[in-house]
Image 1 (cartoon, rainbow, N blue to C red):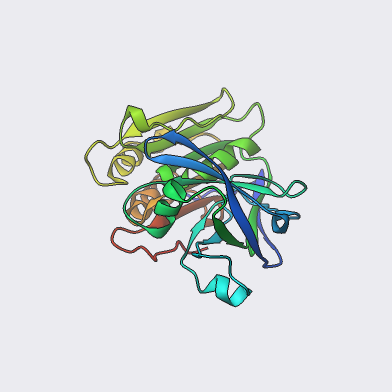
Image 2: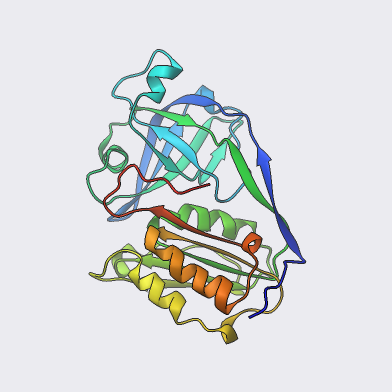
Length: 260
């Protein structure tokens, strides 16, 4: 298929000053048996902002309050997408998929209220200007915060599809979207993470491509990138600037971080 350059929207990179902030765990809310939302609070979060739906911050998990930024940066850390925040009131909400024994998952699931956490970034944002004619969002649990944020940017007349890969009905993660955007929960059962989502993308044909300028975001385990590109570039003919296809994590590599 011939590629079509987006006419109705653009993606623009905007730099931000990199800051490191000290926070404390203020609240925890379990949304499913394997997915938790936490609230961080602290005066350092005053002025915090995140311009792009796919922004990443680095969250640090020290065992005690560090005395310096250098001590903070030496603590174990992982990257996450800010969900909601108030730079005026000094709070930030994050969501964690709880799988495995990683330091971040264990902290999100079990840390005592009041536990210290550090936040670094975001160091820059990719912002959509204008209006896509249609949307495709697809991801596993790790991509839900970004998909929630993309959905919040849609206007009431938006059209498109959102695919959320989860283990089963007990773990479904609803995403609020305009009525013209369908949200489908893709159950993987006992299959490896990302495989059910890959099959769902493989089932979409050229005829399923929405008309006009489409923006697409696909993120899950690293192996999702190949089927995502096969759909978005080969069958739908989207220009590289019109979509994001990322491995947010990689089997067996706790320290893996998606390229920005």
